Image 1 (cartoon, one colour):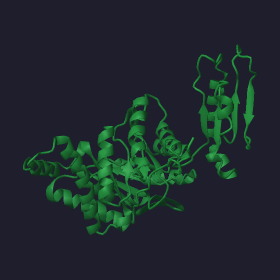
Image 2 (image 1 turned 45 degrees about the horizontal axis):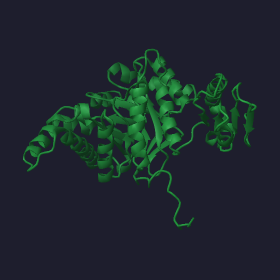
Image 3 (image 1 turned 120 degrees about the horizontal axis):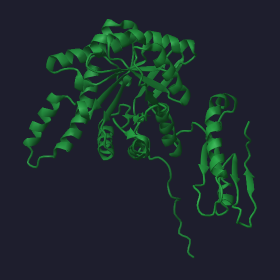
Image 4 (image 1 turned 180 degrees about the horizontal axis):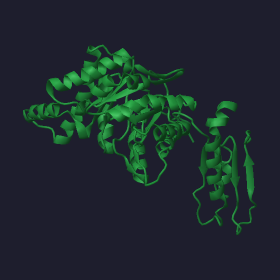
Length: 395
């Protein structure tokens, strides 16, 4: 066989898109978005912000699960008034995760009428599509940017396909009708999302907001639309980008849709922070969205949060549920221990664990993990059960 000299097949993320770096700060806690920093995981509460205890408890749960920023709804005077109390409660509990205020329609009023709220938040999310029209929209937007400048807070200008600026969309549809070959309506909508984000970012800079205090997002609900929009947006600006479907859905559908869309973009080096907008099942755990976000980044090799457990799916060769129960037990145990282990064992989050239930691939695959691969042969097999240990040991 003739050996052909060639480079090995490339692996891993393509060149990361260079961006400005935005800092989100609370006390001594600093989270950088973009500027070469690792992709940040964030989440959002679904409690009534006017209930400070319930909201603080859920923020703590999300932070303990690994959310590096947590967004809360600020939609009423009652909610705005309680934001400082939520921040104080979190500080008393030793939870320094930055809070992001989510504003729609009346954010300009709430931020100016409740300065303590404006100061307790570490970042503002502004939707330029629901701030009114004409001069009213411009004035409301300017008010929010002025508050952000006053308290040195970064801003995410978050455009959403369901609440696009009607005047902008109408103008672009009119322009489109004059094309020799008009685009279809969905293409115009995608272009309008990008134009809205970029023009409002430029407007914010004109009003005095630093260019490195701006994050952009253009959210839609469909996978192919999201990929198309963010590819276009990333080619037309150097602001850090927040990725996520605006309504991913419930259960496996939401997880699959989010993974399909975000993985393509992240592999292309696009995206600086992510949020998985899962619809929780009734009584479901809100922290699920954090775990999904972490697992997307970790399975792609972009970050490490907790030891990854690889487990055999099972087939006709396996005769018991032993390895399934063992895999579930180990995975749950590892995640529970991570808050303590991270402080005691630097790098433990990069450990790999394999639980294999079959004699076909188990022996070979047990060579790769750094911790342990536990396998059991079926009763009808003549091969004995085996346990392969790596170089590390569970504390």
